[in-house]
Image 1 (cartoon, rainbow, N blue to C red):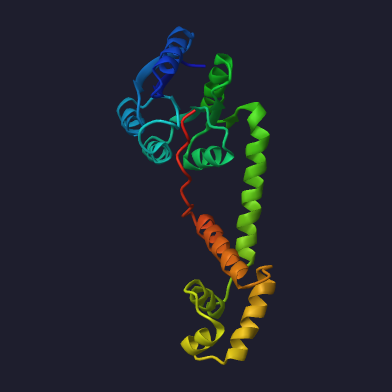
Image 2 (tube, rainbow, N blue to C red; image 1 turned 180 degrees about the vertical axis):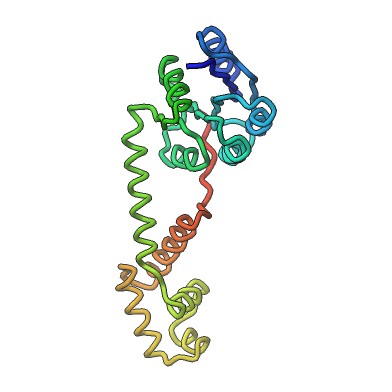
Length: 230
């Protein structure tokens, strides 16, 4: 394998020093640049165009958005997340943003090197002891998207749900939509069956989840929170 150029972005000084030292003494590796905040990710990617970049998630700025921006700007660069976060949501969001590796900070130096080399070969690398959880979460997410696509509300059902969200009762919904109250009750019964809900509140909650899943399936996934400091 040809020499691999690496960039590192991490706001923990000791970890940064350790990773930099590892890259500098590893045969076949060379350090291109280093940064300490999310804003550095894309800037370094565009300026230095390293083969791979090791980034943390818990640092100043929006790391997930920065990963997405860097992946779009320099698609040939492989991004390896090196983090203490064991959240499958964070792992999935990082991978969806464009990261090719997700390595937990409890891993060895050899694991990090293996992740960099694997991603540079075009592979996806996830810390082995964590990969089963991530794969399981991805499968659940895929099933949720499939379910959301299969369970679609009609235009009238969507109108009724929106009025329910406003706290309207059946009589008010009927008046707003020029329907009979009996027809609205029929729609409510059908919605409860369709959404596997037992009452009006559960209809609203199920409809909100359905809408969120549909947005996610369309590529407008809800943002997750920033990892908490270790």
